[in-house]
Image 1 (cartoon, rainbow, N blue to C red):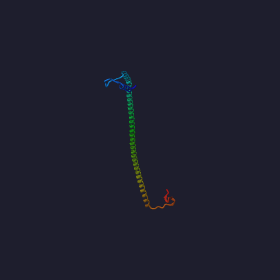
Image 2: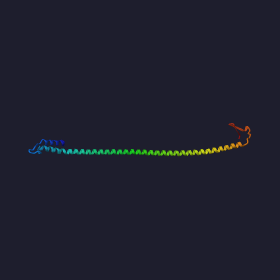
Image 3: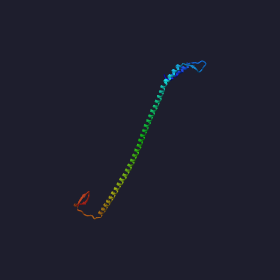
Image 4: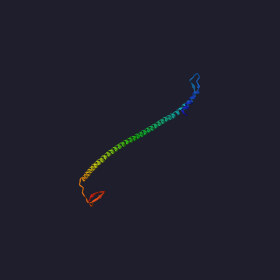
Length: 169
């Protein structure tokens, strides 16, 4: 029997008890029956206290397990957040590094292009100067030829080349 049932039987015993004559609050009850109920309470009380303690212990165990699990979930979430933040930082660092490399490459390419353009310009200037010097020599030679008296060269001593006669050597 459980204690609540025994207490209900005790209450029924008091309700069915006969009143003492000339007294309002006093009743006659079966003492042996009341003692039996009290003894049963004493026998059942430790078991119910044990059950209550087990329930409290189970509750504490459940709460402890839940707290441990919640802490583990929080730790995993924090670790995951750190990984995500770390990955984000790695990505940002990689993008920054890529931008630096690109800027350096573009700067180098511009520098190489400028050096190549300067070299080409120098070569062209030297070529132009050389061609101008050659052209000046050609003009001088033409002028010199124009001022020379015409010589008669016999035809058998000339070689025809594109309609222009050159003397044989």
